[in-house]
Image (cartoon, rainbow, N blue to C red; front, side, top):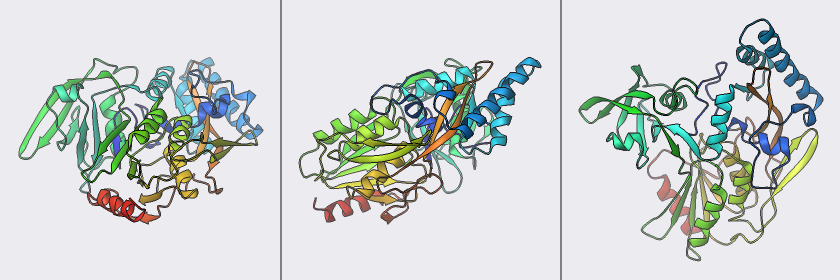
Length: 393
């Protein structure tokens, strides 16, 4: 599984949930505010009582009461809310401080605090730098793709989940903002050294496009932040007619569902993308008309393909638009709704689930590829090109 420092998780891991990711709120705002049909999302949590079913209202109210009691007793309302969410059994429930929630909002807008590296865990448990963002603190310090990250602020990182390593790199939202220093232990071949860099405010580069020697275009989407859907459509429109496209969603941690639907519109001529339920109501998401339905298309996925990325994958697969290649996806297909708690923290609890056009549930199951291959194998892209050639490219 690979990770990129703006998109892996809130800076502080909540109540032992090592995979409580920044984009665990992937469907929250659209579901809570009814804004799925638009392109903008509201930045403030909506009052939970206006939309949640009775059982979900009770759960939100339990968490709010726990925070209020703690505040009245002079204790931490945030910690009390975390304990209440943990007791609720909600796998995706999370509590954020006001600062952390604002940071989450920034991340969905494509802004983040970090050092500018992407990383993945290798088979031996080591953490390898897979990309260094141009102009970032890491790039200025001379860190390169292929370097091994051995420690962060003196803590060894070998064998740890990459999401956890990235969280340490980013630091705590309140106490380690942009400008604070982080000490990295690095290794390159036989050379081992320590580099101190300062975190900075950066803009995400969520879409990258490259053309292979045989003309195949690879569109890599790291996450669905604001504007990504339009960028995918623009990239697809620039590909010469009849040329195949590889849509690389490996390690994509999700994001804004509206952006995933817009991306689907690049390859679908209208029609259903997904259904979801909130407050007992069944609702639907549809692609815009005018997409290219003839271009050969392969979608690459892995265990780090989550949430909105799974929604897109399921739509392309169910509607026979793409051959899906890789390994089973993560299995995050639930809707969270945010509510403000006493003391200013924000709780997000699950209120519904989405399904693919054929009615498949994704949560806890993931998407099974049409062709299972090791997504970390360097030959995977070559396999994708072979499939494209069989599709008529």
